Length: 180
Image (cartoon, rainbow, N blue to C red):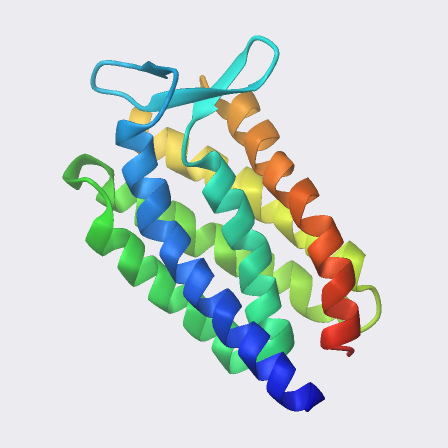
């Protein structure tokens, strides 16, 4: 039974991971307290700090990819990265295709590179460290390519950190469902 639970959790994480990608791309252009002309829709992530609205979903995607790898294995983890990159390129608005796909691919590969060696010994460290590296890379690449500016970098990082912090209790549960 533990193997079945692990597989079900991994497949659910994979489906959620892929579902968050079009959601993030849609949110950037449609959801926010402020929408910048020819720019992103923004949400507050801290007092006085705004970020493109897709930050929350992309922060969660970084953690979900780790769950996919933990439950289903290395091949599924890399497959999720490649599928996510392709999906990101397919669903991003035309002006954001390159920025979205490049940011997604580079950040998820960085997340993978940090998570993989750490996860067997220190799961919480692996998830938080890999997400931190991935979210910074995602933010810098996306903002640079999409808008030619790092104006919302602080907000991007804070918003994604909120998603990672929200995931911590679930990662603790994951240790029980999918031990090393």
